Image (cartoon, rainbow, N blue to C red; front, side, top):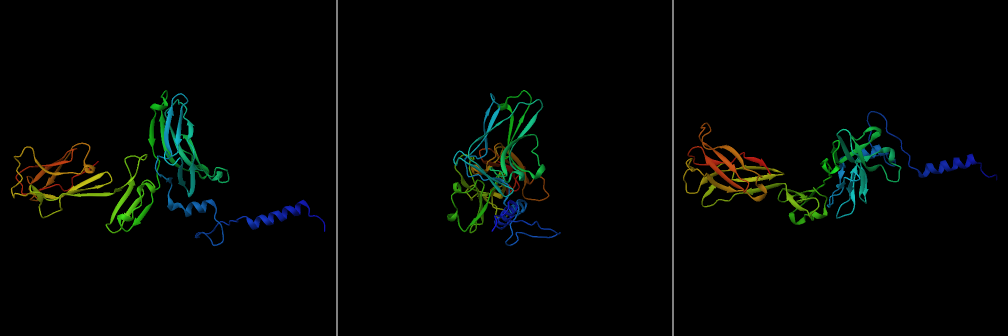
Length: 339
C-alpha cells in the first residue's frame, strides 16, 4: 500500500480535529434559545448566559485592586492585590480575572487636564492569548468600547498641567459583586469574614436583613443590620402617648427616620415657657447625626398652627422638644437625616 500523500495526511488530520474540536453553529431567526443540548456555545453566548452574575470585584477583604504608592519621581502608581489574601479577583462579562502581584502604571504629566481610568478590560480578541480576555489597563480619557470591549472602572486619577501626581484628584469607583444568602436563624449565619464584602444575609425567622461590612475594607468584617431599629421604652418622665407610633428611630443604610408621640408621665402638658426644651429621648450612637438637625412637627389639633413643636437632634444623640404652645403631647414623626 502506497504511503499517503501530504494532501491526504492533511485531510486525515482535519477529519480527526473535527472529531475532537467543539463545533459551534450560531442560532438564526427572530427567536431562539440556548444552550442547545450537545452543542457548545461561543463567548458571546456565554456572556449572555452569565449576565445575571454581574460585573465587579470579588472582595474577600484586604482591599483588592486598591490604588497605592503614588510616586512623583517616576510618575508611577500601583494597583495592588489584597493585603490579606495576596490576590485580587473579579468577574467581567462572565469571565474571571485574577491578579497575583501588584501592577505598576506610569501616569505621565499632561499639558491639559486629563482623567486616567484604571480598568479591568474584557477584550474578545484576546480570548486565545495566554492571559485570557481580561487584563488590567490604564486609559487616558474614556476607555474604548470598540471591538466588543467592556470595562470595570476601578479608579480615576484626574491630573492637571504642572501638577504632582500625589496632588492629583483620585476617585474610587471599584464596583463589587455582593451575593445574597438566606438562613433560618441568626445562629446559622456564617462568619462575616468568610463571605464576600457586602454580602447580604436574610434571616428568615426574624425577617431581618444584614450586610457583611466593617469600619474599613482592610479590617475585620461583621454583620451590620440594614434596618437598625431603636424603640424607646417608657420611663417615669416621658412615655408613649398611646396613639400614633411608639417613639423610636430606624436606620436604613445612612438614613435615620424618627417617629412616635410622647406625653409626660405626670400627666402635665408640655409648656412653651420651658426655654431649654424637653429632653425626650437619647438616640443610640449609630443613629446620631454628625451635626445638629432641627425639625418642626405637628401635635394636637390638625388646623391649629400653635399645636406644633420644634424638634432638635444634637450630635450627642439628645432629642429635645420645644413646643410652640402648651400641648398635651409632642411628636417626632417624619424627622429624618443622614449619618
